[in-house]
Length: 385
Image: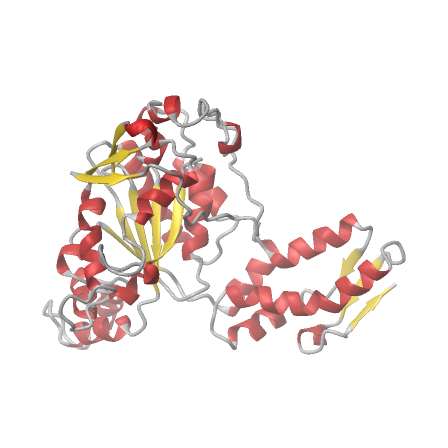
């Protein structure tokens, strides 16, 4: 049992998602008895909230899993199988008392790892926190204590311990904590070892105001680890080329099938501790996004930054006109920097930079904006009228 003090409000990371302006919603008209976070009454300081009964397993109004999947896929493009696998793992942890999910998601920056979790957590109205693994060190050393992830989760649901016990903890850049070969590497693999008990499920005793003690269980928290794991594919390719399962080198179809997933031993060879990997039950590899994927994100994703610009201009009475090939041009430009969907924002912001300035300088002057295909390279290639 861990014993820690929580006698005053901590100044800790509180992940906000103001960029996408997404709120907790019900899917397909499903009703829920849980109020949105901003409306929850916690009974003043901390008292009644701490003892509130909260159990997703008993909530018969959880949205249908298929409806949640369809909702998330309105935002996440090119990751259909991955989204399904992640949602299944999260639901498994929420619905079945005896099955705990700890998920590892592998993928390059901009493939939708973090955004997928955000969409799932918000639509289910589940508290979550997103942490950066690189800021943590072994307990007792300079840096953030791994226990901080629990404090941050509790803070994000306004100190409602009962809700936090069924939340989601996301730890990004976990691949930066691999075994460096240094004994007692306090900022590397030792951090992962410090997380083992929390991940597996343990009881933490918090001392809050007025010296009251509260027990907090981590066994129902879903832990999700994210990382790019650059070079991991070489370990997998090496394993396949040595034919460990006895397949002939000519059996290309079987090798391709095996290549579609990583094994735990690949991650151990990469440098993650065996005892840490042993607590991961679901491994998801995100697809690299193609030009077609990126163009579709711009065109139809609910989070498309292009559509947001278009909507804001429409509010000002301005109709945006462009050739549909523009989406492919933007996607192609973004692919050059190899940062996936993240680069789309930079490219689109560049396109609209001068337009927004001119529109705001003359708010009632224009009714139409025509974008030239060359605006991707030269953001003066537009016409306002």
